[in-house]
Length: 285
Length: 334
Image (cartoon, rainbow over all chains, first blue to last red):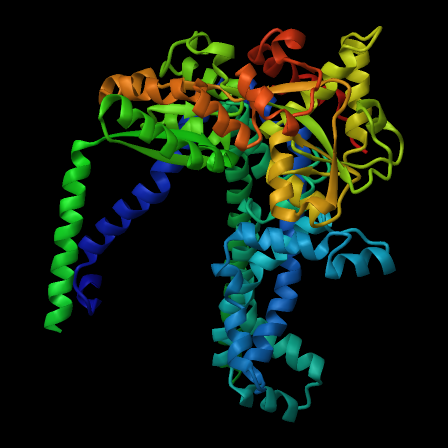
């Protein structure tokens, strides 16, 4: 018995071919061209451009701010998703719709609005600066704010359906077996949510790493301090330095790829552990 | 239902007729920088009318606006611009380097192929509370300057060269004193705006900074948009004259057969009518008579050009804004 006979729908060959062509045209060929362009430089030149002090500072700011924003979104996105699934309150549908706004809003609009709000004269900014002495706009903190804004729907939208699938009875069962609230959350709910949460986190993180439009307005863009790598790439382009720009792009691509791979491995590992426990439980039962 | 169908057919027929008529008209595309929208919105009808009166030919002029360097990159990548009208000579030189137009493009029209000019001026809070008079006042401790990115934006580059040139032209000034001056100047800049317009928004609407440095022509646009009561304009003792170079894109016009029209389009910028249009958009006309006519809006200023201080725009660009150039050396992390 071959595996083929198990498939319900026909057309595997066609759809695979289509997928490969589609992905090649949209993703692989442009990325290949990018790498080919940067390969025109000698290795020494490539290394020199990729490892300047300014480039290092930019990588640190880009990935650091993206990481902080993704963590914040992981925590608060989970809470938002939880509230939207588990509680009923007036205007819930409206709040649910708001979550998608950062997807649809042009990022430049988001950036300009956030800057106006968080500048020292803005509604939020004057309070933060006047009362707490904390500057947000035109500092790295501003970058994090913008990245949180654009990343939040990724977490909410990936976690939401999973929470919907966990029946409330599961919590009740845990409670009736004597679990505290904390135990119910950390031992029962979180393991089930974790893969989806990690996916949401990854999406938010990747989006934040590449974000340009909203960040540049609020960042301050000072070299070494609040300059993101995408701005440094634009800066190279403004200097008519296409090869230099591709070098930075390739570096970002490689770092992102390694990070995403690591997150995928983590996901695979947790999924395995999780299903392993299921079998154990099954044996015990 | 029938009625709508008929209407739709009628509309389709009309569109067909119009496009058939247009097919006989020559069309030229002017690829330009972002804030030139108003200038050419006013200029194109004037030119089209004059051209028709002279040759009887009906022309269509299309516009494309965007960030200056991005626009020329698009042209280099195949956007078929018959003419380019930019705000940085280096952008046109880039096209020459790519072989789209002749290397001596800036000799093909008078005044370095810049039909009008502007100058870098200070925009200060109403009543000039900090009493700014000259570039030297801007480096004092406690002053904050609102500025677009000097490496990435035309406005920022012009300001940078203006401050540098001013310092170098002071008694006893040289490259060393200029570098020190610009270093002190940049210390008073707390953030670089991503573009000229955003710097303006930071200054006017978000209240950032004591002084905004921008083109004289931009000052008028700020006044129109945000009201005249919000700020004052200060003319420093000396400042940079900024250029707005234009060029016919040889490769495109030869291919499309539009050289005659493209040439006429740019030449008309130097006509009295073209010069008046510039003046009405607060760009300083190069025509002496027109400048005199609009003297009320253009107070006399002492300017220097990039050629005078730096040799050429390409030299200035390589020395100051390329990686490892003077900006990277004098800019210090706070």
